[in-house]
Length: 484
Image (spheres, helix red, strand yellow):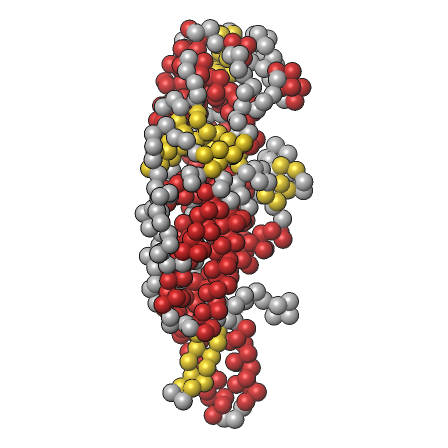
């Protein structure tokens, strides 16, 4: 069964159909680099990174493109505030964004476009729209005429009256219709500018993505992604520009939008002032637990940002990490990570851990249902813990461990810095066992029992045998109690 997706324009679930069989061209809107990204921005990009990785896993050849908006009114205003140039602002926050994405284990896209590297392409596209009567010059500013595009509103499903009532309209005395939007903005003194047939200026925001996406992926590419807040006006305007310019449709075959992060029952937004920076949350919880939080609810759903939800995600991730460490201790090296792919036509019956794999894949093929996919991994961990207790050296555990590594690596987790520090863990446990043996030799049994209990609480099971004391990690939850 092919992968099913929720497609925004048709407002329903349908099979993923691509321009070329087995290939996917995908574009997701990247950041405007004028500030640090908040956790809502980050969640969208974590999700489209994972969607790319999953499509590759399922046998598709994927070309994934994103962008940096590195010229914009917000960047200019930030430059004035910080007393540096707009170029310096863009560079500073581009580097900060890349550091955040690295911490969240977001893989670099196949291509990242900068708006300032494509100004000539945008000018050529705007000239074409003017020639076709879809855009007009208004004293050095160029606007797209929405009335020239009869199907304007087909993505959002909104009428022009609805749009006028629900959106802030930027006034301009040269506009023919209040909702006409800027393709080119004439430069004010001291602002960055490029030459054009209408005088020096810079492109509007909307023209960037339609020009860059079609330059590298062509008209009719397969997936355009972004947050649901971009459906209108940004993505609506992209469609109008691209299809009016080429005279062909569709601009995009499949539109996919992630749900917004909610904070205090409102959409997280810099403009509303109710946002939390990704870098601050990563500093508190770590990149991989935050990635867990971002992926644990399906991409199209709204995600609640609360201390409780981050704490739950962190504790659940810790259980996975502890289980990974227990596997490493019992089995040594037991899995090399995800295979190149598990194509749609692959039979999984004979694959180790097939029950969990099939459940995971069925969930992800069903519109990337990550909540059900995560449940499959939790079931695997629960069954694996029983094997660690009863058959810690068996082939069944080894097979299950390989499946666990395959799925969690696919999700973007490495468990570095904790469960993988097996040599340090072993040394510390061995030291505590030596201290326990000394206590027993001195008949200080209360101290010996206390060491054993402390080890058990930390997830270490010890066995006193005739050939000495053996121990193993039992992968229990080591969340500290209130009195610790």
